[in-house]
Amino acid sequence: RAQEPPSADSILAEARAQAQASHRAIFVIFHASWCGWCKKLDSFIESAEIEPIFDEYFVTVHITVEERSDKKALNTPGGDELCKRLGGPSGLPFHAFLDSQGSLLVNSLAPDGNIGHPDAPEEVDWFMAMLAKAAPDMTHEETTILENWLRHQKH
Image 1 (spheres, rainbow, N blue to C red):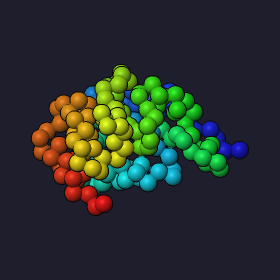
Image 2 (image 1 turned 60 degrees about the vertical axis):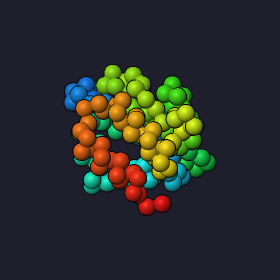
Image 3 (image 1 turned 30 degrees about the vertical axis):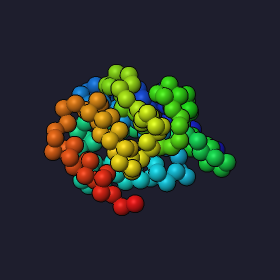
């Protein structure tokens, strides 16, 4: 039998410790293996241009939820409950920025619904507003790099 993945609470506790030690916020991504938009969000934050900026301001953690049939064992224990506590679920990916203590700063639920991976102009607008709340010290140059990447991504 495969080993059970770490719990959402233990993942968040470790993220809080890292965030407090490094004076960063926490970026929590709720995702699933079948979710194409989740993969797009990951490729954004892991791209060579974006990753150093995210690493500067955020401790990024992934919580697996909504896996189906033979992949149910991949679900993070307690992930669904954590997602609900942070305002989800409303489709995947759902994400939230937390302060270093683990308190919600802002989530991906815009007035029109979950932005998931920001793709449409209004979704990018919401994501940029999220970043302004989560990383107020981010420079104009850094936010411009992030925004340009999102606005000019291949569709």
